[in-house]
Length: 70
Image (cartoon, rainbow, N blue to C red; front, side, top):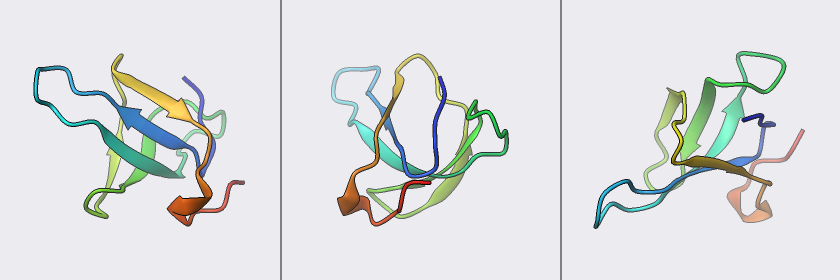
């Protein structure tokens, strides 16, 4: 999984009733775009460092997120 700053990380719920979570990638500790990713969650604005599991996928940036792509 490779990402760029501004891409979205989408995590699907793993159990019935789990909500989908979406974050904007704001930092890449590794220059090649591999995890971990620094992200800002769209639902609560919190930031975290994450190693996404198999339920995660990278999507291209959404201009509505307010983070320019690099």
